Image (cartoon, rainbow, N blue to C red; front, side, top):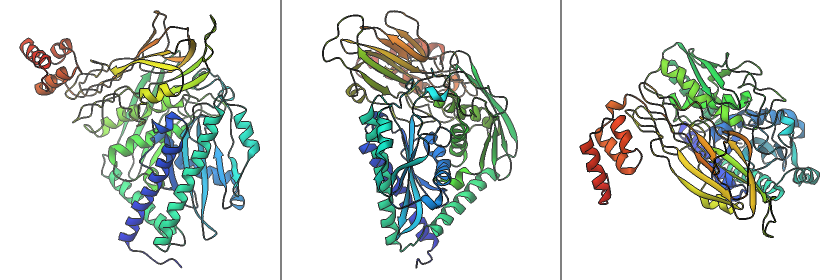
Length: 569
C-alpha cells in the first residue's frame, strides 16, 4: 500500500509532475508535423486526477489552450462513460464548446492506469493547419461551414486505432498526412507523460494520486484566495472596442473582488457576429482567468484550484459566449482582447499594476497557394496550405517597456521565415521591426512588424487575413500614447481588409504592418538616456524623439553621429 508522505515529499512530487507535463509538451513539439506546433508552440499539455481536475500544466503552451483544456477532461469522462474507460484507450475531439473553442484545435485525452487501476488522465491540444470546410478564416456563417467536426469519441479502443475514423478525417481535409501525423504526435506525447508519471509513482511508492492531488489543490486554492483577500474589495467597469469583421465589436466587463473570488461579468458586450469571430465562453473564460491570475498570483502553478476563484459570466449568444452553431473559427481574435478589457477595469481597482494595451490578437495569416490560372503554370507548381503566426508589440508595463513583436496574452512564438518557406511555395520578402509603432510613454510600447509575402513563380494564392487593430489601435494607459494601427495593402495598390479571404494574382505581394503596443505614463517622464537608446537602435525616428520626447536637436545629432561611427547606446 502507498504510504503517507510529508509536505516536503509532496512538494517534490508536485515539482516532478510539472516536469512530467513539460516533457510531455516538448515531445509534442519534437514530433508534430504542423509548423504552428513545432515553431510557434501553439499547444498545451496537462495531467488530471480521476475526477478530471487539472493537477499540473506544461509551461510550454498557450493560456487559451491550457485554461480551456482544464474544463475539457470532465466532458470526456462524461461522454465516454467511466464504465467504458480502459487501458490503451485514446480519446479525441475538436468540439469548440467542450474542447478549446474552434474546430482547428484537436484535443486528445488518454487514461493513465497503474497496476490495472485508473489513476488519472493526460490531455494535450494542438492547433492543426487544416480541418476542411472553408479553411482557417472568418468567412463562414455557421460552424457547419468551418470544417470537419469530431465529437468526443475513441481514437483508439484498448490500443486499436479506429481506422474508419482515420479514413473519414483523411477524406475531409486538405493536408491529410500532416493532420494524421499531428494526431499520432498528440497520442504519443500523452503516452510519454503516462510513462513518466508511472516512473514517479513507483519511485515514491504511490498506488494512486489522491494524496498529492489533495496537496496540490488545497495549497493552490488557499494561496490564490489569500491573494484575492488582500485586494481592495470593490468593483469597476472596463470597456474596449475592436475592429470586428465589417463592424466594430465592443467588450464590456465588470470586475468585482468579492472576498474569496473575483467575478468578471461581460454583460453589455456585443452580440454574435455573422462571421466567424465569435468566441465560446470556455475560451473567453480561459483568457479572463489568465489575465487576473498573472496580475495577482503569477507564481502559483496553474491547476483546477488556482483557476477556480476566478468566475466568468457572460450572456448567452454574446460575442464572448457564442452558442452552437455560431461560427467560431477565429475565436482567438476576440478571446485575445479579453485581458485588455479586464485590465481596463482592474486598473481602477489596483492602480499601477497591469500593462497598457498591446496588439492583442495574433497577427496570423494563412496562404492557400495553387498553380496560376491566368496563364500556363510550370510543372512543379503545386497546391499548398501555409499558416504563419506573427505578433505585434505588447503594451508597456508600469516599470518596463513593452516587448517588441511578442504576443501577449497568447505567448505564441513568431514563426521563423525559414520554417514558413519550407512549408510551401511561399516567399517572405520582408520581415522586420516597425519603427515608431510603439506608443510613447514613460515606458514605451513594444514595436510591431513589417511583413511582405508573395508566392514562388507560377503560383497565385488566397490569403486569409486574421488581423485587428486596423481602426482601433492599442490605447495608452495613465498618460501613455496609443500604439500604431494595422495596415494591409496589395503591391498593386488594391485595397485589402484586415479579415477575410482575399485573392492575390500571380506576381503580386501583400504588404502588412502589424500594430504596436501602447505606452504607459507621461512620455515627458521617460529617461533621456532611454530615448537616446531607442533612437540609436532605430526603434524611434528623430521626428518622434523630438515631438514625443522633446529630445533636443543637439542630442539627436550626437546620437546620429555616434551611430554613423558604429557606436552603440
